[in-house]
Length: 266
Length: 268
Image 1 (tube, each protein chain N blue to C red):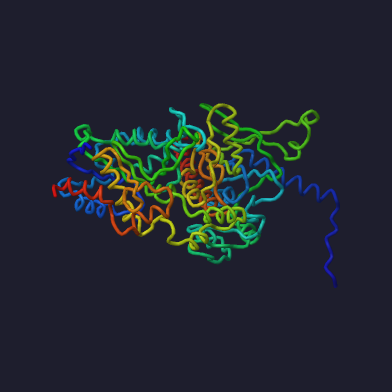
Image 2 (cartoon, rainbow over the protein chains, first blue to last red):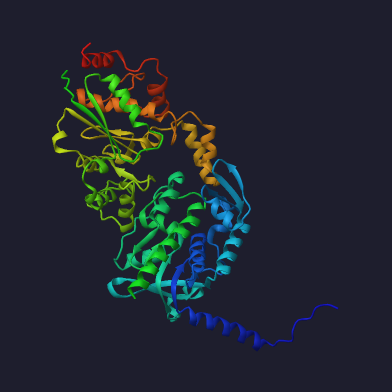
């Protein structure tokens, strides 16, 4: 006999969605770390922090997660990483092959979906279709959270959208918004920092420098991935993802140190 | 022509490519300059009692970055915290990662501060080897040009400059542009041009840099580091092909004029 679906009505479906979403939203109104941007760097950082037992929320403006990690250069769905990035591929159990000395290639969909699944398995929660609007700043202009709104709101004309955003608090915020460096830019609008804008493409050197510059850029705000490049005016990176993955890991290590330091003070 | 008397050549390792053997360069200079002492000083920050000044120097290095090669760097740029931290790690020898472009003359001014005052006279030749890429502003075409070396007090020779400053073969750049547009990795391209330019960690690097060290010596001796003879190690190469010829392929090391000057210096 064919399987039959349970006789559940529309209102139960709605109730299940709203209740579960609301419960999670309420819980994550305050967290250890909010990561803005659900691309490879943000997912890696979230995964590492959640595995260390931290409460992490990733804010993603799109419906989908993974950012540009689904595809490599020229819209082709093969993603490349340079050594030592293959270590992360091994850790995530992503199949790959070495194409030339120190250069590895994997299937974009396979790599990206494994990374997303691993972040979810680690306990990261997501607010997708949610757009970063502003920062929460507390004493001494320390970053203490983000102001967000639904993504569709930002697509509507300002004249007819009087929809105020809401604020979420966290001990730390991580900017993983890629070249846009949206969170850092918001600090710049307030005159708290001056970003340098990304430099010319110099693929060979950019990855090392992104890792070297990953870190706290302002009290309470850590910058990772390609946002590092924009913040510091580093050479642009080509279509390789090793630095984004490892920058996420390094950013998480720095975040953990900061969280431990602030826990000691408290 | 006035030839200056030299007392000592001092070599510093301010974070170079791992492929560069400064001891070998020192040995080469000792053979060329029999009457001049050559001393390898190593890390200039370790030699001088300036550890407490690490933050100071890190801020200085971080404030001389060129962001746009078509715009002259403004003095007094305010560096970001992360930029200073990176420079601190470089000074402390915790990283040799590179890729930042610096204003060469400003870099020379900073390194000059590391020279001991009693050794700042013209009879001392200070050569700093590093892997920082630096450029100098050209007022004629109003843009920065990357350099292998900059001569003066001190002289600076960049191992990254050896790779990046002299132009590679024209067809390399045409293919590189295509590779970048296609999202292909330029490592593959490098394999195709292997040997036709000096690359990072190239085993020929030390041999090449010996010639640049001699340019620094000649700058100190006669005020002119260069020679117009394409086969002389003092030739100011603008292409990798010229560099490889002058430093590695040419049948003679120095032209007759510069050979004569070296012999005079050695009292022959």
